[in-house]
Structure formats: C-alpha cells, structure tokens
Amino acid sequence: MSEGLIRTFSFLVLIVVGLLLKSKIPADQRSGVKQIILSLALPAVIFVSLQKVEFSLGLVLFPVLALLFNLILFSISGWLAKLAHIDGSQTSRTARILLPSLAPGLSCFPFILEYLGEDSLANAAFADIGNKIFVLILLYIVAMRWYYQLHKIQEKSQRGRVKKFALIMAKEPVNLAIMAALILVGLGIDYSVFPEFLQLGIDKLGLIMTPLVMIFIGLSVKLTWNHAKQILTMLMWRSAFSFLLSGTVILIFNISDPALLMLIVLFPQSSCSFWPYLHIESVMGLESNLIDEKKTFDPTFALNILAVSLPFSTVIILSLATFKEQVADSRTIFSLGGVIVLSLLISTFFRKFKNYAVARVLANSDSNS
Image 1 (cartoon, helix red, strand yellow):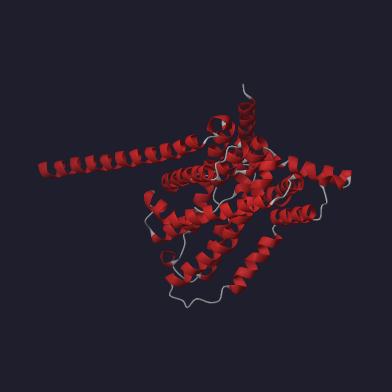
Image 2: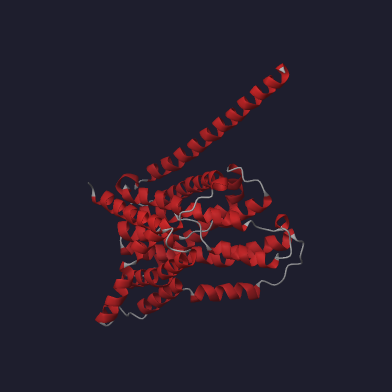
C-alpha cells in the first residue's frame, strides 16, 4: 500500500473515532476542541512554518489571489444558489454570504502540512490573510447592507463596526502568530535562536493539530436531510467552479511546481467559514422583534451549510491530496471541474424528465377518470 493511502486511512480512523465519541461529548465541549485547534495548535504550526520560510515580494501574491477568488465566488454565489434550486430570499442570502468564505484552518491546512510540507503551509497561511480580510470585514459590511436594504433603513456609518471586526481580526491567535513570525523574519531572528525548551513546546503543540482536526470533523458531522440535497448540489457547483478558477490561475502563471500547483487547487476547496454565521447572528440580534419570515437570513440553513460543508470539503481535499501525483496537472484540474458540471447537468435533466413524466401520468389518469 502506498504511503499516501496509509496516511489517508490513518486520518479516516481518527474521523471514525470522532464519530464514535459524538454521543459522549456535548456540543459545548466540541467547541472547546475547536478552540484548542484554532487558538493553540494551528498558530504553533503556522508560526514555525513562517519562521522557516524565506520571505520575498512574491508571497504578497498569495493573499491577493485568495481575496480575488473570494470576490469572484461571491459575484456568482447567487447563480450557484439558483442552480441548487435555492430560490427563497432568506435562504439565498444565507447561501450567498457563506459560499464564498473559506475555512482552511479546519479543512485544508492539516492536509497541506501532511502532504505538501511546511513551505506550502506557510504559503497557505499568507493566502489566508486575503481570505480573512474578505470574511471578517467585507462580508460583515455586505450582511449589514442587506439588512438596511431589506428594512429600508437609512444606512449608518460602518466605521465603528469595521474597526471592531478589524480589532477582532488582529487579536485572533492565528493572525497573531502570522504577525509575530513576520516581524521576527523581518528583524532577521530565526527560529533556531529560541531556547530549546520553547522550541520543543511549540513543536509539540503543532503535533496535536492534525489528530484533533480529524477527531473534530468526526464530532461535527451532522446532516440535516431536509436541506442536505440542496446544499450538496450547491457545494458541488462551488467545487466545480473552484477547480476551473484554479486551473485558470495555473495556466496564467504557467505553474509547474507540483507543491505550488496542488496548493492552488486545495486551498479554494476549503469548507465554508464559521465567521459569516457570526455576522448572521449579529443581524438576527437587530431583528429580534421581527417574525422569521421578515428576517434577513435563515440561521438554521446557515448551520446546515456549515455541517455539510466540512465533511464535503474534507473528502474532496483528502482525495486530491492522496492522489496528488495524478492530479497535479492543469488539464486534470479542468477535467475535474468539467466532470462535476456535466454530472450536475445530467442529474438536473433526469430530475426534470422524471417530474415531467410523473406530471403526464397524473394528467392522463385525471382525464381517464
């Protein structure tokens, strides 16, 4: 058995462990596991990775490309919702604010570290800066604008609110780790000058990240079947367009390095971020006196998207990472996007044909009676 498959099956074992523990660990304790990942393990891994990377102006391109990806996906998010037959205004707005967001910390970084190495993880951490700007600031502004427009409220200054979320972004442990590492790199301070006990402590924090993430995924899997079909269809459209965008970037920049190519493919396949849900909750607090039908967003649908998105992205990313030698080619990436689009179109055709056939049978039975 290949090394990639052995590693993949070891991850699946940890996910199964999470599934088995699901009934024994309450929701509040699962949140604690996520906080350990995001506040300790992931910052430690990113800090060490950035300390070992040689900074160049070319790294600035990563957050720019990530932000551009967010903006493109947001521009077509309404269309993706329609393709998944999500027509309600509440659910459509909810889908549009979640679809273009990325949560690479939980769904992508562990696989980048395990399959592509620390250099690729450092590049991914730089890319996430652009994604964080979009998710924390721009999506919050979008959520508030939709709230003002729906209720015909004269829009207030966003400066205070944007400042608040900018401060939150600056205080987030992952971003603190990135800033600290960059400052030290800029000052010429290398990781090797740290006391050995401190290096050992940070390294051990990093070691717990991947097992905790896999277990957390198992704990978080919770399908709500009334929306599952729509959400899966929507996520498949999102994945297909992400493949096509990744392939376009690879062609434009003529990328041939396998690790960099796979990074450009894996990063956009990350699951939807939890941050837009917090923006939705902020808006819901302003609408506490309104009936559900009059509210801007559907928080239940948002949670369903998050619940389905994490395992969906994990399967996609894990499959791509396992067979990275076979898929590290722009033609293969375009083909993957095309195959998903074709399968979705065929599925839509058969569904419409089935509905048409059922309608004809019902019409004939009514006329005969």
